[in-house]
Length: 411
Ligand SMILES: Cc1cc2nc3c(=O)[nH]c(=O)nc-3n(C[C@H](O)[C@H](O)[C@H](O)COP(=O)(O)OP(=O)(O)OC[C@H]3O[C@@H](n4cnc5c(N)ncnc54)[C@H](O)[C@@H]3O)c2cc1C
Image 1 (cartoon, rainbow, N blue to C red):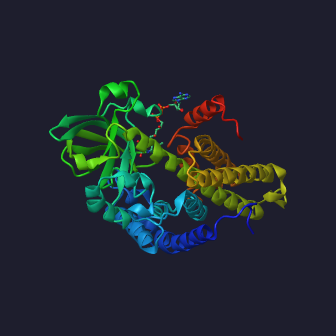
Image 2 (cartoon, rainbow, N blue to C red):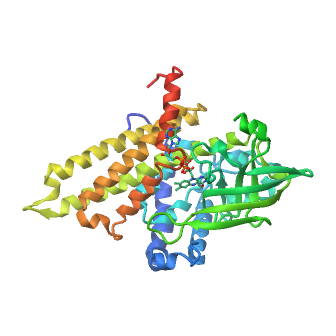
Image 3 (cartoon, helix red, strand yellow):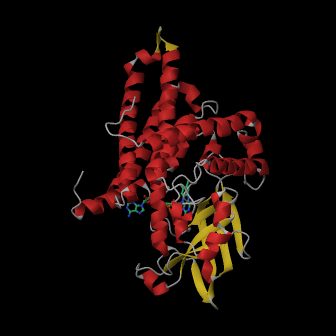
């Protein structure tokens, strides 16, 4: 039975069903088979904080198997070799993946090409040379990339970046430092944003360009892996560019207009995070319902107590609302609308409602909620981080307010 009063196209529901089968066969099965190597932090990470060689191989294998099965590039435009199913398909498949996996079975992150790590509409702006040399490996999942926008002094106000691309013959030399760059320790390429016209950049009128750089280029290095709370390794890192030479064919999009590419990528990230928050929350709420129906206290199942059931009812209501917001934003984007306000609302609301929902699920579990066994704290942490990534809640509120005060009052 559908909870929607409108139709989701059959091919999208079928894609989500297909992804679910794939995830059960390729992700859950791997985690079950290699639990000791994939879920034990002492074995998951090397000394320097990178994922072990084994884990990296599993990540690549999942990407490649998904590409082969036709899921990995589901929303990548057909013009660059993807299935071109659009953002509703992106939303629906990601939501389903996290609904099935929660946060524990982390290999599921590699099933659908994440806009920053793999092929996405962002790559439709690369030059013919890059299309030929880089795209095939990205599309088959054997290679991955990362997205270097944020810097130590430039986060929410990303245009404050200091990385420079200085003309050098017919190309440029890039110097600077990026931070929080997800997947950078494992990526084959980085899309880096650098100032190419300091005056325009200072006036916030362009002047920033995007370049695709192989991570084995001389002068590029991962300075340190950043360990997020409670982890002894990680996916984010600080990257240094020391006079890294780039050729004209490495420019992505138009010279001086790269910032738009960044914003476009971040829009995809907002759909991704909306969907992931809803999926993880549904997983957590279902876990909490199951626990409440079996755990007894004071002579009854705890589900009998409204102190337990009402927070879950509220969480379910909020997640249903978030689900509707996310689907609506994805549909608007697929229709070619910018949907700046609606997308901002969907992302901000989904990740905030997600935090409340997972928190309610933890509380329902009592002490058990904090154990590694149930994975709820991991889920909380993941959704909580999404309150910062791809536009913080405050920056999204700022965007929504700007739209409202410009007269966009359609709600
Ligand atoms: C898990 C994770 C992965 C990430 N991956 C990447 C990546 O792959 N590539 C990349 O480039 N970046 C990445 N980021 C960085 C992310 O884009 C930034 O963290 C984000 O833009 C916020 O910047 P900041 O952390 O510097 O916070 P700041 O900009 O320093 O903000 C600090 C606080 O001030 C608030 N604030 C700032 N300005 C305003 C304002 N005008 N009004 C109200 N409040 C304001 C913010 O909302 C926040 O609460 C990642 C971040 C996380 C958490």
